[in-house]
Structures are given as C-alpha cells and as structure tokens.
Length: 282
View 1 (cartoon, rainbow, N blue to C red):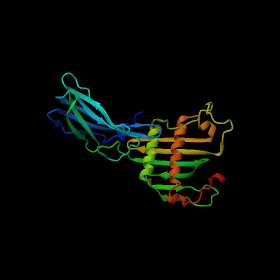
View 2 (cartoon, rainbow, N blue to C red):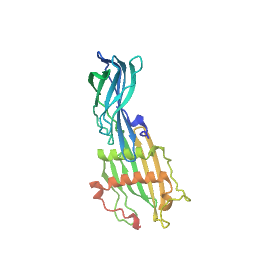
View 3 (cartoon, rainbow, N blue to C red):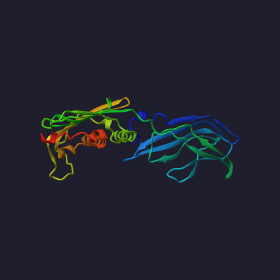
View 4 (cartoon, rainbow, N blue to C red):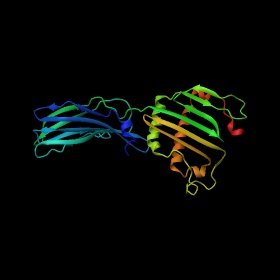
C-alpha cells in the first residue's frame, strides 16, 4: 500500500539532472525518484531512476543494489536503438526524512564487449518531507477531564477530580523529533484520517476475546484532534466494556494512537513530577 496522502509525505522525492551526451550513449532525460511504501510496521524507501535516450551500442545496463545484492539490469532498447525505462536502484526498510544522494553505474555494450561505463549521481533526494503535526488529546473518567495534551499551546494539563484534594496543574510540553516521527508513522500505518469521527462499538461482534472481558467502572472517554499539514480529524469514544470495544477496527485505531500518545507523555519529566489525578477513587 502506498503511504497515505503521498502529496503530504513526499515533497522532495523527484529530481531531474542534466542531459548526458557521450559517443556511446545520449541521455535526453534523467529523473531520480525517491518513493515510499508501507509495510506492517516499517516505512520502506525506494530509489528509482528513469532514463530516456539513444545508444550506439547493442545494449545498456544500469546497476542496482536491491537488498544488498548488486546486479546490472538491462534497459529495454528498441530497434531504433532508443530506450525509455525506469529501474529501481535500491531500497531500504528504514526510510527517513533525511536528505541523501544516490549513484549508479551505466554500462554500454556491443557484441558482448563493454564499450563504455560511467556514473550517474542524483541531486539531493529525500524519501518524504516531515509534515507538521499538531494535536489535542484528552482522557476523561466519568465525564471528568483527567489528562489533556495540547501541542498547539505546548502544554500538558492534569485535572484533579472531586476528592483528589489538589488544583489542576499545567506544565510545558513538546514532542521530541523521534516521538513526532513515531506518531506520524502510526497515523499513516493505521489510516487514521480515513476513520469515522465518532466511534461506536459493535455489540454483536465476535471479538475472539475470552468470554469474561474486563468491564471498566467508571467509564472512560478518549478524544483526539490531530492535524497533519492540511489534514485534520477529530475522533471521540467512550466505553466501559472492553469486549465491545475491540469489536470495532476504528476503535482499535483510536486506542493505538491514544496509547502511543500516553506512552510518550508519561515519560516526560514535567508530567512525572505531577501527582496522580485520583479520579478513579471518586
């Protein structure tokens, strides 16, 4: 599956270079493309090379690197000695937003003998541009706010419930680069922006969980509002029954994202220093 909203994530992945004129080959067009695909838990990066031109040889090859194996892949040369072909030069299972260059070797042959060999090097490439991430996350118990994260204001607030005996506290908060990257990858992997806004459980679903499921009292509510560049979505869900919760794929997505956000903020020093909310004991 192609990464969700390629226009958002792939912004500096195509570069055209100057033409090549040689006695054995003339390249009228050279285009390097950095693309991404999504695995079960990895973002794969692919570098492709499109070349168009003419040769005085019988055949032309381009070197590829695949998963570490080096090969020389022949281009499709027609009877007029012209070619227009795209070759995947390399791929990685750990695509990042870092800029890089890529090189390959083009060989020209006639009658099986090597006529010429030269290096093609890309301009600066990147697999995808990191989009701007902003979010509001709220966790509530029986309708009372407990934890609230707002990256628009760069704050985290812990609300203290009726019998907690403490005032609400707000501390500064910002995601690290690695934390933002992990959340963006999760949003893409779960197809978050194509899920419904308000989630309901499917009471008659077969969940595959044990018959005795956990019932939460009081009920818990989750709210996330996430903006990624020009995409924005709000999702809400309230439950006290885990059996029903896992019967809905969109609910599982919300819980995956909520769990990832929670796992991040509970490790931040400012949040660790706050007292527990005490809401479960009201």
